[in-house]
Length: 151
Image 1 (cartoon, one colour):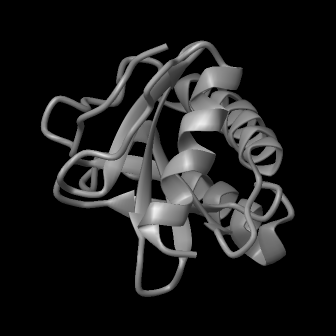
Image 2 (cartoon, one colour):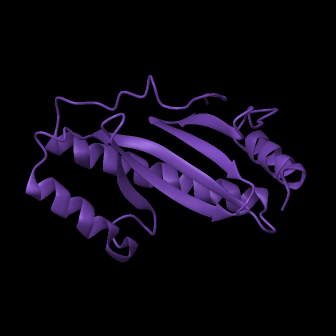
């Protein structure tokens, strides 16, 4: 699927959630806020996939606990605790990030909507879980790549 083919899918998805004219920016990405989840969708032309990611917590490299690392590793093992999505650390921002890829070959707006809804629910769940382990910290997304539409 080319970007020209993906754009109508993205716009139809946007219309289905009440965002007319949803489009990618110059970085081939857009940002959505769904309930309390801020997520970025980035079109990856070379692999014909949509990369979706969201900060779900913070990690202090100097104060990380073995319990937290074990919890994240267990969740990532075969995607059992993330529904097939991936948790990782973004060291430049100190963020724990949930990410997932969606192939765009023959992608329909309905499949995109279901994936985004699923992604947002998993991100919300992990944000709450991580907030319980590190309640004084919240993701600082001010320097993370942004651009797009908030809903």
